[in-house]
Length: 248
View 1 (cartoon, helix red, strand yellow):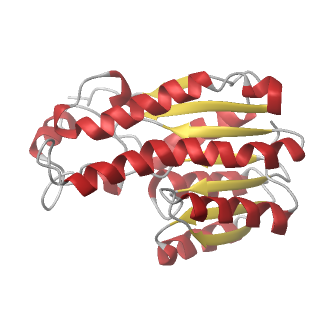
View 2 (tube, rainbow, N blue to C red):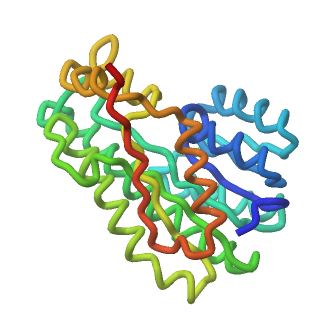
View 3 (tube, rainbow, N blue to C red):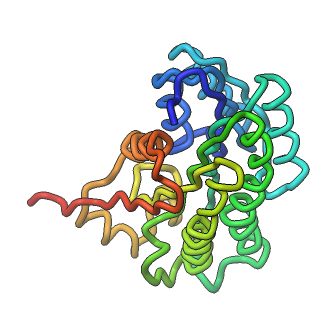
């Protein structure tokens, strides 16, 4: 799909990968970018960056775990911008500084709601507006953790594996709705999710891995997201962006 003059929604756009994707979409010529995040103040900062690149931003306070909240942002996007073409289901959270199984029940439920339920509902809500707009592209953010056991972050890993299989199960949407659903699986990225994995910084188990690899940047992942949007054969694609070993 050509990005120029298209309308996009990016969830989790307040910082990290979501912010980088929103800025990259603006640089690529998107007409309007809706920044859907629960952290309104940080979303406004992203809006300034998007505006500086020439696109029209709309920072919309959104809880992707809440169906009504998701529905409002999709409906308002289509109403204000006369269409919807791109959705980056990017919002995500992890166990935080408490490892599984000590993570509180409420936090575990929130991880499932944000990381998996939010992706499923966001996709479902975007289908008809995209069909009315002539088709679209949806890119889901999963994780390299979808493919390997991660005992300290077991809930997070399980939700990301679910995102991968959901993406692969959405291939028929290309024929029924002209919507290509794909997925990017980042390795370790310089985001707050890594910094918040332990008390006061990366968790000790994670630090051992960080010492051995080169970190990815949010911009690295945003570039892959745009590649998937542009690729007409991306339906069902699951692309891993892996870390390289740290040079001695």
